Amino acid sequence: MTGDKNQTALLHHIMRLKQERDEKAALGLKNGPLSGQVDDGIVHMTETRIYVGLNDPQTKEQKHETEKYLGILKKVCQSYRVAFSVDIEEGGYYHEDGTYTEETSFVLLMIGADRETVRKVAKDLCAFFGQEAVLVTENHLDGYFISEDVSL
Image 1 (cartoon, rainbow, N blue to C red):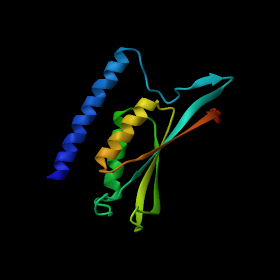
Image 2: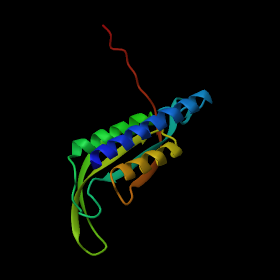
Image 3: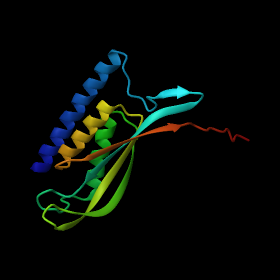
Image 4: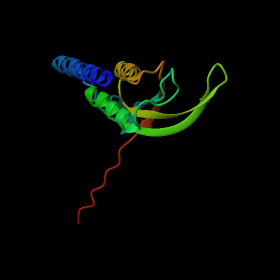
């Protein structure tokens, strides 16, 4: 039953996001992949990473298969219309009481997403994955694109 409630909540959430996106579009606002300043072909942009653990905070164990969490993460990112990459990481950490836990985590990478959208994505992932908190990091970088036509 809990899975049905979570899926229903996710679907309602996605519908709300689509409505917000349509409202932004009507105002001429966009959340594109290159929301940065361009100087001589160099794009100044922000690289954001969201670190999301998959263990349940109470049991300290992962409740569902990693693929299920990955499907939710993809739906959240698609609903906000952000370009993303995700890495699956394995690691460990110590709790305040000194106990050690190993955990699978996602590291979600977004380049050029605005801070408001990143916060919404992070909050959604935190809620949908039942986490106490997620870590968000930002790096400012310069990037450029190279394209080459290799037609024969």
